[in-house]
Structure formats: structure tokens, C-alpha cells
Image (tube, rainbow, N blue to C red; front, side, top):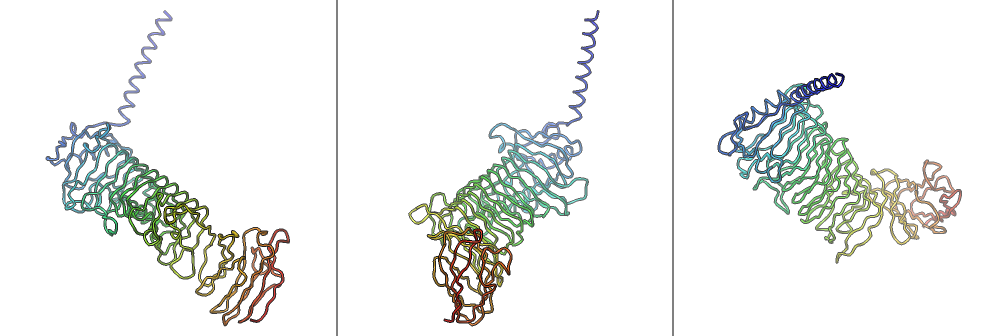
Length: 520
């Protein structure tokens, strides 16, 4: 009897569990078919716009899942996905089916194909959104992720996976906010981002073409683009504001890979690859956020600027990138273009197509604000691998007495780089005489940052050949200097000189001894 009772109770418990699971499954997400439940045809003859919009409205209302069976669904007007949350729209998952399962544009030129208006946590996968092959009727924006109308949700954290996106005369994907709220962390994974024939960037000198991913709001940050392709664009990724992060993306056949203008937001590009492009990075004038590029392979197939920098404040970090593809390119074919004061550039362990790509900062524009370059190589004529000089040149402003250190040469040290009026003067430990011609009263401050020892006993003579006084300060008057002058302050009158001898002492610092000031 005990066994019978236990068996009866077990059956009741199993039945109850089954009912609970069935109820929970039904409550989690309703599921419908675009053809069977909404009457779409998918032959690119019938107009399926109304059916698709009705299906989207149902998905939003029920937080459901919409399956799009194989077919080409003709769309003649904008589709809107407004205030969607925790929904899924997906197509055929078998290989090669995503071009065969597509929402395809056949409406008027301009406007938007698909607007995600205040939608979050939506998932789109395994089908195509296609503007077709007729540039005369191409929409301006293929997918617009925005918040245009008031509602409970902000647009954010939408996911596009294994999708094919083609078209958008202005941009294939635009991420912004008409209302100034966060639109962040959207992800595009294994997405092909392509161009309608006739709208693509035309190499090598074309100046028109669409953008692959256009990020336009300071709160549109942390956009994730993982693997996939971007091709045929004037600019593959353009952060007018906000930020984007690329990982393992194929970027062949674009005018510029990345244009960064984020205000305070960092953008990154890691492990990307591509041929047949012209410019690796351009910084927009608003750029204040750092940009970091690591372990990318960029082949500058077309002649033009490898980097384009404007009046930027944000730093640019280049680490372990291949910019030459094993080939020398003359400086007039691959170069750095700077207008105004370029960004602070940090370059470590990169390969460049020639020795002149990195522009050493100077007081006369164009210039970089500062350059920290260590362990880089370049290709010389004949595709010979050569070692690029190392540079440590900190940020400087015109008219300030901020010294800088440049490394290179046989001794490993080339001395302090000082701004004097409109000219740079490089004081080398290996040179015996340095002539300085200030155009106004100037003061030089020496703040070496290297350890002493290599330059024991070397002498440097500084000549003031100008018509104004030239002062020299030491660490007693400017904290942080690594130099001790025997005299507290040395002032060179016009047509005077001073001789320094460098030696190690006082706990490993450099000491300037035997300062001899004499008239010329």
C-alpha cells in the first residue's frame, strides 16, 4: 500500500510540474510566423509592408518572437519598431539562407528603411535588410536606432546577429538620440555591412560615399561591432560623438576605416583586417576621448593619408599594428596629414610603410601635440625592414618653457628639445656647440628624465646669438628638474655663451659643473 501511495503521489507531482512548465513556457514568449499569421507573401511582387508592420506591432505588444520564413518581402514604406522591449525577430538559420530571407526595399528614395524608436533589448538575427541594387530609390538610412517619440524605454542594448545589411545613401546604421538620453551598448555581431552599387566609395580619390556605422550623440556610447564585414564605404565607422568598439572586423575597400570625434568617450579597434583602403584613422575636431588601435592589419593599398589629424585634444594610441603589409611606400604616397595641432600620439611596436609617417612635433604647424614612440619599425626602399628612432616629446604650447626629450642617434640620446620663439633647438650631448637666437626674452628650463652615466665628461657650449637675454633655470627654481646648476640662475646676455660639463653625482643626478659665461 505504501508503494502504491508513493506511486500515485509521484504521478500527481509529475502532472503538476508538466502544467507549471507549460504555463511558464506560454507566458515567457508567444511565437508567430510572418507568413502563416500575418499573411505576408515573400515573392517580391506583393507589397508586404503592412503585413510586416502588423507583425512588428504584435511582437512589441506581446513581447513575442517573430519568425520570418525564407522569402523576399517587398517593402515600400518605412517600418517602425516603437517601444519594443525583450523581443526577437529571426529568419532562417541554415547557411546561405540570410540573403534568401530578406526585407527588401522598393519604395521612394530618401528617408529611413527601419526605425527602432525607443526600443531596447531586442534581438534581430539570420535575415537581410536590403536596399537592393537600384541607387535611384535608395533610402538615406537603412537602420536608424533613435528615440524620436516619448515613451518608457530608451533605445539601447539592441542586438543584431548574423545579419546582412545593404544600403543607406548616408549611413547603413545610424545610432543617435533625438532626445538627449542614453543609446548605448548596441551590438552588431557577424553582420555584413555593404553598399548599393552606384553609391559606394570610388577609390582612390573619391570624396563621397556612405558611412557603415554612424554614431551621432554623446550618449550613444559603447557600440560593439564584432567580426563581420564593412565594405564600400567612404567611412566604415564614424563616431561624430559617442563611442564604438571594433573587434575582429573585416574592413576592406573603404576610404577610411575609423573617424573618431567622441567627446570624452574612448573608442577602440582591435584585431581588424583589410586591404584596398586608403586611410586608417581620422580624428574629427571634437575629439577629446582617447582612441586606441591594437593588433590591426591595415594595407594602404590606395595612395593618400594614412592618418588625418585636425585640431584635436584627445590622445591616439597605436599598439602593435601592421600598416605596411611588408611593402615600402614613399612618403608622398602614404603619410600623416595634420591641420592645426594634431593629437598627442603614442605609438608602440608598430610597422610603418616609411620613416616619415610619424610627424615629429615642432612649434610651427602642422605638428603633433606630443609624440611618444617606442619600438617601431618601418620599411625602407627595397622593402628593407629598418628601426625607427624612438621619441619622447611631451605636450608643449607655444611660448612655454617645457623641455622635451628625444631619443636616437649613436649615443642613444639627442638631448633636450626647447621651443624658442618660432623655432626648435635640439641640444645634443654629442654636439659641442649649440646656437640659440631668441626673438624675445626667453628662459630655458632643463628637466632631463634619463639616468646619468652615458655622457660623463661631455661638454656643451650654448651661444646666445640673438638680441635678447636667454635665461637658464635649474631644479632649485623649478621643482622636478634632474639637473643641478652650480649657479642658481644663469642669464646669457646677447652675444654671450656658457659651457657645461656633465657628470654623475649627488645620488645619481646630472650635475652641471664649470659653468663659464663669456662674451663671443
